[in-house]
Image (cartoon, one colour):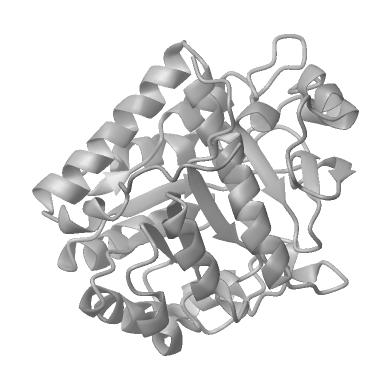
Length: 333
């Protein structure tokens, strides 16, 4: 059973050039970019701590001028890298990102420019369509990431056509609330589950089971956000238990041995804070499933296996898989 963290969730900036309906990070003040030296050191320290994946996020991660350097450093350390972008800046930065992103996600939430741009609060639909061939030319294989809600679920079919035309995976990501139980209607989730049966559509159905069961319950917690994930903010703080509920802040990020008192406290309270009741935040439960041995674990594993088969075998993007596996770097004691 896993014990060490698997994911580094690195917020390298809280700046964003979009104003998405379902996100508030763009409104955070003051605006801050992570310092380059801090990021490079934290990559080393968190890799030593056991993290295997690093998700460079924001805000809009492409707004950070040193993102290519961070990605290259992460790859040299043996990380599997992930970036999600709204694509506004991707056309001008595609060449410098080539060869460094293992899991690239292009956000697209509707099949028409008007509806998509309304949801995103900016003109980015055309940038997504422009970015797809550019990424493929640079040997990058993006997934199309569709955050579904009650008001855009009927747009999935149109976006699916775009994905199929380009032999790309379409990821359905249910919108989440950070303030309590899921507010998306069961009918919307049912439709998403039906759509996920189509070839080339990925949905981690464990998310739906979790929500049907009322999310996390503090008397019998499922969340493993502290165990599974190290979260770092642009101002070089480790945030516990998660980004959305920053009860504990630790600077510097570097792991201590034995764990600092604050980290020990967060482990004990994992999934048990009052705000954890009903929680269903995807980006923390997705890695948490790896630390369970129950229905959620097997549902998540099955969904990921199907994604791998479809993307790398049936769609034959197997060459893009090779970069994910590099020899583990040995660190001095």
